[in-house]
Image (cartoon, rainbow, N blue to C red; front, side, top):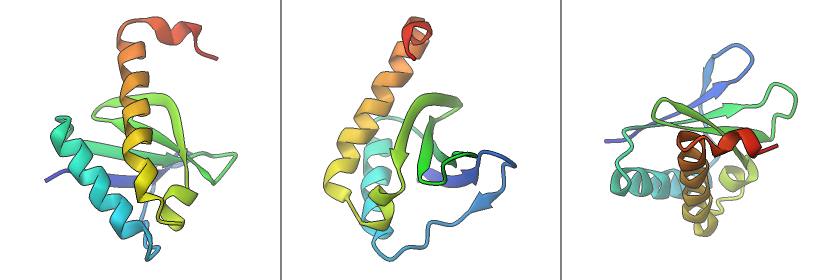
Length: 102
């Protein structure tokens, strides 16, 4: 089973995504992570903008974020695409192209 965590970027404290509409989104992330070989997925709440959730796949913290409305508004139909973009950011970073990202 995939371990999905939500943390504050500023202090590392874990928090729960308890919004009722988040359940379907979390389920879709579980399915996506399982099919893409990730055991750990984390979302880190930005210290300056609480609506930004930075994505971490496995041990790789990415230069990619998802808006919290994805969870609070239950936008399950877009989360797979967003996670695919996050995986692309991970691949860019692994290849050394992240230095060109702003």
